[in-house]
Image (cartoon, rainbow, N blue to C red; front, side, top):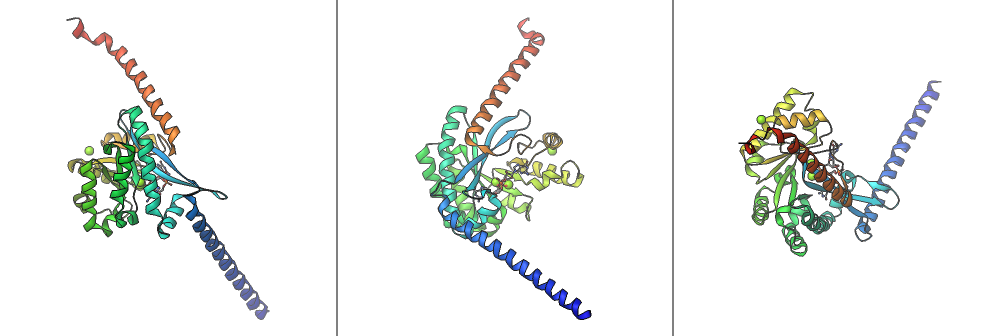
Length: 307
Ligand code: C2E
Ligand code: MG
Ligand code: MG
Ligand code: MG
């Protein structure tokens, strides 16, 4: 019976092993399949760009949007950027795809800014794109062919890119800043988040990571850090975006500490460009209505006309 138990255990072990290998094979096959389809995705027009509004909390004015890449696989449907972005980068395709994103953003950005006035569109830039040196050329060409104002374009870089490329980074970024493109430091608080980056990195905008915003209301120490971060940024002439704002209490807290802009599901999820256009139009209509109601209310106390 001891022998039987041992035999059973071995069987079980083997089955487990087989389970793991088949699971492993399944994953590897899936990844291989994704890689093959990723190579064709750009040609087949499977990529799309969604826009997530960035908003001034006090006035609820839309100041711009972050451009986020979307991929709809013909059989598996939408696949998360968390999966396909690293794959694209491994395959050496990400810089090319981001070049496409920049072009698209400038061409619809031009139409939207013609219609609504200045808005700022931010694009995420990967380390490989930054490294290959085509970033500047891609941006210059896209701005030129779309004739969108450079002030309406922003690049988002994460600190790990900065760590890797401290030396060459400031040159490219200073040149971009010179022509009017804004530079944002993305996901601050996710990694090491050393304050020295704020000193060395020529950022116009700091994006505080969702991880800090999640605990804003429940964790006082966390809130203290965010408050100081906003103050410090302002002292350095940097504006602050809070990422991943989902709740009203988070919003009120951020207003209290003078956070410049918010981005998150509380106001809007990333959406197709046509929906963003409607979103901005509706917000403006709404704002005009509120403004006119306010001015009507305040009319009786405008005594200057009586005097
Ligand atoms: P990210 O640049 O930090 O973008 C913000 C992410 O947070 C987006 O996820 C957005 O949908 C999500 N988000 C915004 N507000 C909320 C909220 O209130 N709640 C929650 N739960 N999530 C919120 P998404 O679109 O899945 O993109 C994930 C990441 O993929 C991006 O993070 C960015 O790092 C990367 N990514 C997307 N497009 C590109 C691209 O063109 N190039 C590069 N290099 N990376 C990209
Ligand atoms: Mg980003
Ligand atoms: Mg981010
Ligand atoms: Mg303060």
